[in-house]
Structures are given as structure tokens and as C-alpha cells.
Length: 172
View 1 (tube, one colour):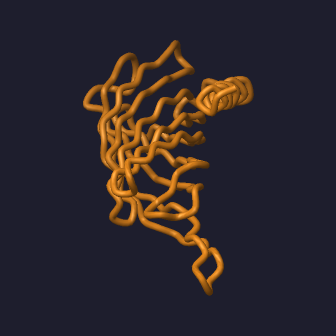
View 2 (tube, one colour; view 1 turned 120 degrees about the vertical axis):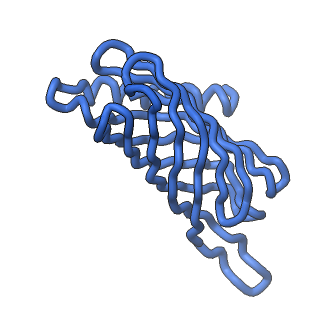
């Protein structure tokens, strides 16, 4: 099995488990739990591409605004020559110019932190470090019935000065 096939299989399994476990009740429609696949292309670290999976919790506070807390892990991503493997925690805001039902485009802005490992030096051990992220992008989403939603996003990221491009596909 190739790496991409394993990642797609892992995301599909995570989405299926999330869908089975989090079948929303009528009173829970404003909370969305989801799984995502994320592709990350690091522009300033030699055009490396990496895929990862993530999980999200969204709160639809208004028909045109959603706040989403996301956890994403890229096992192969290396920021600025770091050891492969990065984990990001972001708080995103999605603004829908139309209501967030049916087929709807949206704008994303977000702030977050990511953790990575600096490689060992001649006299120093590997060090875990934290970085700051700013995210901006566009997405499109659609609802499927009353309880389900799928989305696709394109994002520009600034991760401690590294310019990165990210795409996400998710379901909740």
C-alpha cells in the first residue's frame, strides 16, 4: 500500500467512525464534529508536500458564522529543516456570505500554534519547539440532509515566517 493510499484509508475510516459515533440529535445541530484530510506544501523549506489527518469541533453561532477548533497532525512535514512531524492546533472562523446551509462558499481566517522538533546539533539534543500560525483562505461547503456537511478549503498559512499552502477536505 502506498503512503497516499494509507492516508486516504485512514481519513475515510476516521470519518466513518466519527459519523457513526456523533450522529447529531435535533438539539445538537449547532455543534459539528468532523474528520479532515489536510495536504500541506511548505514553500520556504524546499517545496515539500505532506499529508495529514485532523479532527475538528465547530460551533455554528449564527447561520453565517462558524468557529472551529482543529487538531491536525502531519507526520512528514518539516518546517525550516526540522525533524519530520508537526502538529497544529488552530482556531478558525468561517464567514458565510449566505447561510451555512445548502451549497455555500466561505472565507476562513485563523490563528494557531504548531509543535515541531528541531534536529540535534553537534552538542545539543533534539528540542521540541512551538510556533505561531496565521491562516487565511477560501472554502466551499454543502450540507447533506439536515445533519451532515462536507467542505473543501484552500488556505495560505504563515507558520513562524514560513509561507505554506494547505488544502483540506472534510466531513462532519
